Image (cartoon, rainbow, N blue to C red; front, side):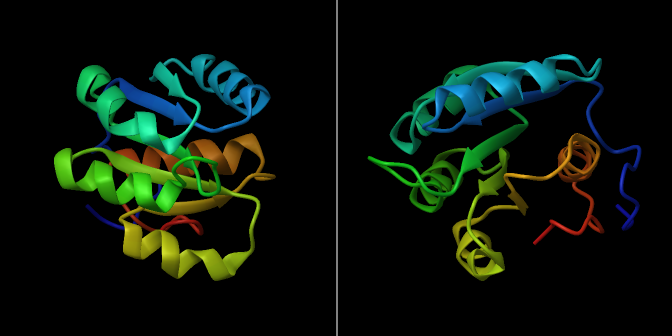
Length: 140
């Protein structure tokens, strides 16, 4: 895949699992993603401890996961997920600064997106990661 942002390698339907401890964040993200013709939100989790079971059951292409959550944070959950379902691509959402990039990358995340990111760049990142591409400013 080239560095093209929205290359043709993305699946026709991108299955997304949302993981965040704040219900309003999950709801807002699910709402905007569901408005896109090529995206299907297959489920939601309230913390990282639920990710492995949900991913096994729901088979998402992309897991949007908060970096900081109680019980099990995003990095630990990404590592656990990678151990059992290496095909799921993780996009970390964070309210923290760029210093979290290396931590997210080591855990296996494909991108680190600030929570305040506008919808257009967020969707471009999601589609880039789904197509196994690179070149978006959030890709790791």
